Image 1 (cartoon, rainbow over the protein chains, first blue to last red):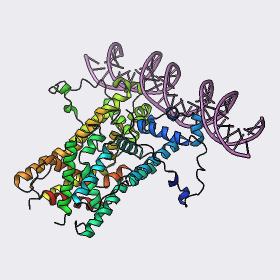
Image 2: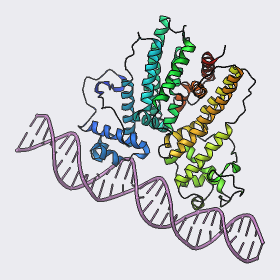
Image 3: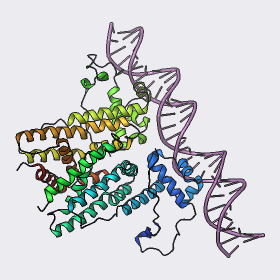
Image 4: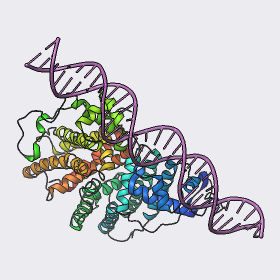
Length: 227
Length: 227
DNA sequence: GACGAACTGAACTATTCGGTTTACTTAAAT
DNA sequence: ATTTAAGTAAACCGAATAGTTCAGTTCGTC
């Protein structure tokens, strides 16, 4: 099974050194021309086989690069893995920035958001990323944090920001906005996520998806609707 | 870190051969006296280190058994792992059978159920089991199914059965009872589960737990309460 | 107490894998 | 054209691991 994956987004200017201001020097860190190849190859293999399952030889082969070159960029497998995972988390965060049309009716906006969440959860990439992060969160604590903040937290914050607007507008009445946002994202996953993650189903019937989304929106409005 | 674990429950009569009636022959399969030791040792090590991380030597040592004995019971590591995981799923399922007091007010019953769900999710054992099953669901498809059915499905069914009673009684109005049950269990986990699974927190502040449970019950009743 | 099955411990095989080294080639910049 | 940094292919190393084997020990049972 090949890893479905959107075309690689470049994030060259996102890299700030040591939390300081962006360095004007363009690419100083990447000591060679095949840096991206290595990262891309590693991404494919790690996502396919996990950390333990992936062999460095496989990665080098997939990257079209010699093992020596790979090790000239990264001191060891761990670091390579962390770098790949971090890059993927960043990409994931960037992609979550799809716009929301504030002016549409609340129910419609929520349904759309739910669709997006479920689309990601159903995607090959989403599932593999989730699996990998859960499996390695203990060995790589920073990976767990990274994924949590660039995934669940990112989405919750976006929804919370939207909800805040609707409350201001008087469309909804919510006291604990963060909790409400979390509740909504949870409702979207009802059962579907478990079935995917545990391999009981590899994709969801549109009928089931619609049922869950409908249920989520209805429940959310029943609780927080200004009526 | 040692694996917190309730005392081993025996499940001798639960084993039905090939779906047929229970065989009267007591223990024919276990060819020796140290069978349980092996299973227990394997359980500890697999739960601590995962499938790849666990070495057979470690397991044998933990079980207080020679490697030869171990291999006299199980043809290979895979099968041993599957047997351990199946046994744990069964144990998990049995333990979920705690009784619910039907006569108590709905809000109270739901809150109690939520507490139980969260207690399991927060437990060392619950987290390790979840992690292990997610990580290995692809390599061991049957493990994924087993866990799904003895965990999430089991709980959903129990809640659904209770909800059906409350509907009959006129306390709640629910059309899709299975969906409602799934929604409730999802609501219980809001954010807490993610934080645990990704290692952002190793346990939850009681204050946060109360907030989530309250939120879940309130939302559920807002949607399905007969009022 | 003797017999047979279960068990031991340790050595052994064969393989895999992370990481290094070496001798050589390519590409690009001055 | 020369020099230098980057890359290659392959052999190599040490450690770890799954699984096997076997001569000898323990234990329950008759």
